[in-house]
Length: 63
Image (cartoon, one colour):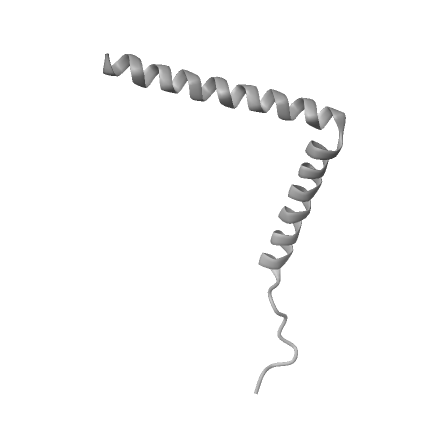
């Protein structure tokens, strides 16, 4: 028979909900505000520059 006084551990569920809420708030800020749009443009530029630099390094190593 199951012990009715034993507490169940819901730590994983609580952590998952907290992470999901934080991600939702972050994405909402990025896509629904003007500051978020500006930040997305900055991130996009940095990623493109990084990829371009890596590609240039690979090409220069092969030649």
